[in-house]
Structure formats: structure tokens, C-alpha cells
Image (cartoon, rainbow, N blue to C red; front, side, top):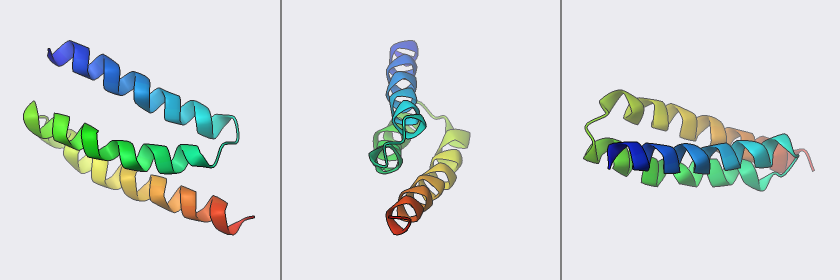
Amino acid sequence: MLEVGSVVLAALMLGGTALIAHGRRFGWLYLCVMQLPAGAYDVATHQWGFIVMGFVGGWFYWRGWRRTRSAR
């Protein structure tokens, strides 16, 4: 179960990164929102270090989305 969840979350996160790489502003917001299920998974699997990373990453994704929004 742990491996399947990790693969699914990694694929979803890579999808958001691909959106950003292709100039899609939505990718920032998508990755910010993806921190919620990723955080729940981290708590369920006791991966405490990833929870901290999720908060920091979520803040960066939110900031990226806001920056691209104000650049228009």
C-alpha cells in the first residue's frame, strides 16, 4: 500500500510540475492544493519530515501562483 500511494502521489505532483513547465499558471494552484492529500498520506504513513516539506512547498506553490497572477 505504501508503495502504491507514493507512486500515485509522485505522478500527480509531476503532473503539476509539467503544467508549470508548459507555462500553465494553474499548475501552481494545483500543486498547492495537492499538498492536502499528500499531507494526509504523510500523517497516515508516519512520514513526519514530509509534512514539514508540504507546508514549505505549499507556501512556495501559493506564492508562485500569486506571482504569476499579478504578472498578467
